[in-house]
Length: 334
Image: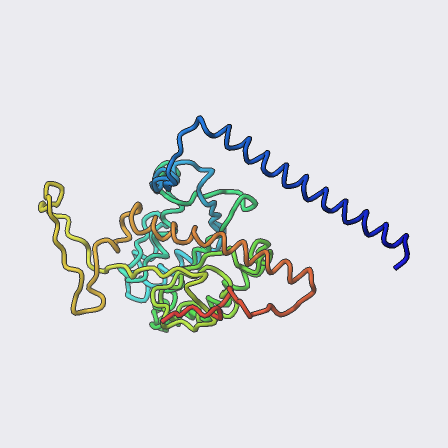
């Protein structure tokens, strides 16, 4: 090694040593200064803050998840399905009622009806809700599609007389196809492949015709074990209770003045189960369903971001090694 090379290495070594010593000095000086500034303040234990009450967080509109209701969805997918149901039973007078007076049948999968009623209530009556309805879709975090999918499947099992002595069949499959045609024509459905949309399909057969095309959406299901694993999972969807078809007792016997409350948790029959599954209370089960849906929002945004990165990379098929959009994530669903 020549003399010039040795001199250069020596200079580099001395520079490195000087920089290291200077860094150590700055570090300890900073620590000492910080400790001195904190010495006059009492040391507080690391205590987690108290949990925030649902009503507290939901009282501020800015903290609530913004939901856009497709109120321009043709009525054939909502109130029209209810009209068909009553017509099949021969109650034409009920079927011809106005939407405000139309009665949804006492059906175990009635969440689709109660979520629509909830979003159409005045906002001052929804002060305890985790979500707030917005009228501008550009402001929305989530989009609710109010298709009565479960009732549509029920109606398709029967026929009704059309007035001329003939019987006309209601087709749930055709209604599903028409719904998808309408949805796929919507800008906001196409924008994120439906990932930020919410649909109710409590009946395991609901949306069966088009499930491959709506599986990206947040699905509200009652029986996850009867839905294909590649269509629904705990990761992105919400399991909701069946509605009790027997009206709750509202007599004189109350529980307000009792110090101890005993109740029966089970029943011999599967469809027996439970006052707190009563959808008629808008501030009870309905709010809890919205709360569960709103908690999916961070994951929804993550999946949308992943989709956009794949599009930027010109990748047509997603990498399913850690798939979140379907149940290939290793999370058991049964």
